[in-house]
Image 1 (cartoon, rainbow, N blue to C red):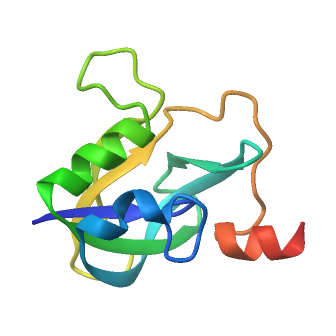
Image 2 (image 1 turned 135 degrees about the vertical axis):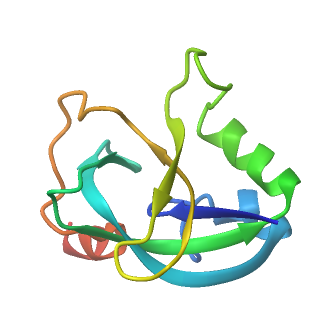
Length: 124
């Protein structure tokens, strides 16, 4: 079992949830300190302990599920040319930790003023 925090298109009911659904063992709500950025069809998160909380879900997945998410997020491993980096993070409110896919900076994209991809989609 592998725990991963998701905050965008992998969320239950979102466009890419089908990538992980066959490998999903459990889902729990969660929050991580950071900032969301609007990349268009999907968000990116930058970790920031001084920022607000990003709303998402903690998935427990099989190792195959982690590999499927690595492929989607174009994560090839430490030190590789990755689109997203996979890093270890702790929940902002509960004793829970796991992997999350993040960018190291905003890459010039606009910040999402709310900490929720679902809420942002409803407002657009």
